[in-house]
Image (tube, rainbow, N blue to C red; front, side):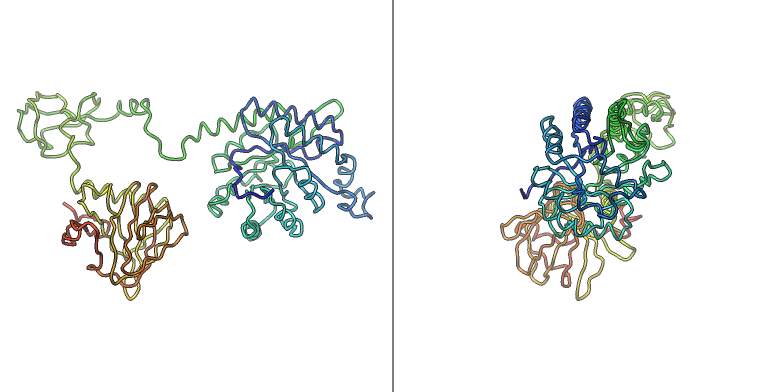
Length: 508
């Protein structure tokens, strides 16, 4: 069934049975049950994956008895009937696991649909098999595709293929060597793929030594959020190959994943833990007076010295400013109070704080500004309220055409206004922009554009922080007309601060 809901591939573990059922349906059921126990114990979402082939047509008739290709005899010796595969699928579903299958030919896609298997997995050997991929794309199911043996152009083509057909898909870094040695794992490819395809979830399909749990930790740290490996259950009758994990190894693999999450921590800058703050405080310097100071006296640099240990309630050396006024009498070697350094931020402090944050946003978005540009800080209700109302404008060029970068910090808004002369188009590069045009609101995401014609009222805001391009006709300094008459009555210099070279050596 085709739906418009996106499938959540994130943190799904694919437990690949492949031919480890050995053509024995009871053994296959045992593998599913053992894997279910592992997944429940680790509290992870897992899929047991099968492989389908219509062997009567998949293998060339002249090669049925061919011993030169090891796979032919392996596939034939582990053959299962349709009803036996159905038992495995039903057991997987009954135990709360995700059903998944790799089809190696077109009839197998039909069988996947017939059995209502949830996800189709494309193995690396089939990632350039376009007749099969066309069939898979038409099935209307979520797809995961391994990319072993593909170069960048081939992966680009694969991504384009599924994207153009509206397929809900993820891709996995994979090395098709069984088993894969550490030197061949190429785990940096995960980050490369993540950067190249930022809107697609990237996974890691692994074939390394089952006792090696380092790769999943590194894969997670590099951004993989979907994981696969071959699994099985060894018995006196059935042995496992060198790249398949037994239940104990699967449990340890899950544990390594949990450890990786713990070690990697937050994906945004977290608050400083109290224990870390206390630890760092023991090495920070306090501000101490050299000789007696009376209340009301100005305090100069030569009147104080910096030394460890800093004491709670005392001023830290980083907060020192020349010219503070003593709030009490201080005797030699006593610490200045931290309250002396507490004050409302100055205009200069606000502006430089904004500059630092905007530069950080541009770096995070990987947007270079070059060297030839001018910067304005728009603060419609004063610099003091900039974090609430305003934006940064970086003008790149202004001729018969104009290009600016407009940057807003999280939760900032820009007042309702229009232009008589200028027509402009916004294109979001990073973050999300909520724009209101003549009373109609819409949210723009990276890549989205919005035309604003002359005389059209518009305002915008952002929850996330946003960087967008403004492409327009010539921009004029007297061409912004605001709904709020208080802003309209201001001289332009009252609501704008020019920042030459990011304000370096400019603001006293």
